[in-house]
Length: 259
Image (tube, rainbow, N blue to C red; front, side):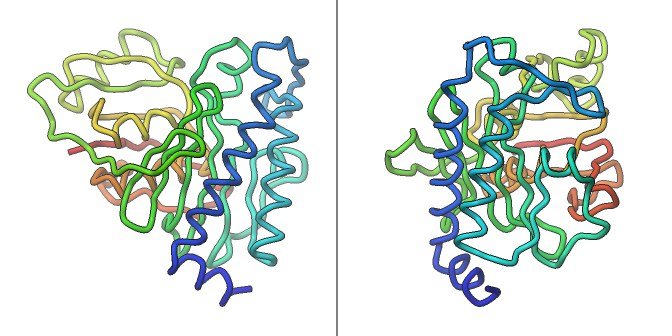
């Protein structure tokens, strides 16, 4: 198992495989979008749908078939059975449908996130957006973007302009968003859901994503992999790179920045 995964990571085959799996999961999700899908509530009061559950089942099945024995930490499995007590040296972080609230309300900004963590850092990651048919990944040669099924093209962060633009979660107030944007050198801000924020910074359209509220590691790992490969950074309050395998697989505050 370890040899198989190590070889696939070194050759780039793993990057291709998880991108295909994420896009296959996107195809599972898309028929439920804007269809009036029924919604259940998890123990933490967050919503879950059949789209979340079926996409996660597919991802877990595909990963186990390719790379058996690797620890998986997936959002819906954790919600049902609890988080593992400790992280392995290598493990998958999976969010089958990031931005479920936006998905339920018919917005486009929801994603599929798959990341491989090694020694506390993301070494592979893909973010796929079912509604727009676009994927971003940490590829063999840096950060890349493609429309589903097409060729990959390179992306990179932009140099910070004089009037930078921040991306913020819709959960913050306008006053708080303006304050956070200004703190990180941005004169403008825009609200966006899900891990798309990391990817839009990675492709040079925005400049910072400050986050003060709690998230889980599966919300950020794949996006961090993409952004770092594009030349950006994701930093905790101590100024250090956001790390993975923390207790409960929970994140504190962080900021994602481009150039």
